[in-house]
Image (cartoon, rainbow, N blue to C red; front, side, top):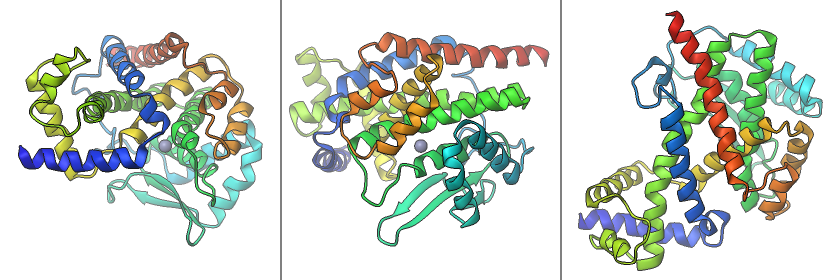
Length: 342
Ligand SMILES: [Zn+2]
């Protein structure tokens, strides 16, 4: 256990040094409370969440889907048609990326890499790497990564980009699914893939809940040790349910650190991003506001101002939770009806 604590404390020391004074650091408690609420909403409203149902298959690239029915060209065609119609100012860029090889397609059956959007600042090289699943997962990934690429700049990026870029991409992917539904693509399949976003929040929130308490303990009491759980109790702070769940969180953190998987600040972007996107869709926030935000996201660190520009007020968190809940209910309705047919 001693070695485990040393590795965790070394990581925390570095993490606090690198991320000090960021939006994430200033909002640890709200992120904890939000994660807790989202987990409750998921458990109450997603009837498949804690089962081994087929709808939970294919969620990650190393657990790929066997259902093959869409080739990469058609996925690109769907995205291009959507961009041409809903956001024509991005069409030239999309076409350039298609023609000059910025898109790099691999097959998830052969490669276990995640899809990414990157920019090399040294040789000014852009790459959108898409791991194809050959189903509706692909247009979803293509639009998501393409929108990220539109806010990557040679000048680097700001705290507001880290906080908001996932929200912008998730807003576009959700709009794309609505567009595909209108075009007549299979509704059950669309909702099966749409559900990945809410299920992803399930894992993100579990991870955040544990890490935020570990981080918060480190900031309050210094190095994490066998006393940490008792220290939190002593000062009546939000705590793990018992010593056993504390030990589990420490073990999980250690394992993730070995695999270098931990980045709670990045993960918090998926959580907040999902809430922002669903709320904006529910309130019919205009796509132009998101395009405008995407173009100036690196010029400012005024995160609350950016959110205001797309009609989001973090103090109205009930509204954010309600939008998330409605999204799950609507997805589950389609999937449950499909289940009845079987
Ligand atoms: Zn992303």
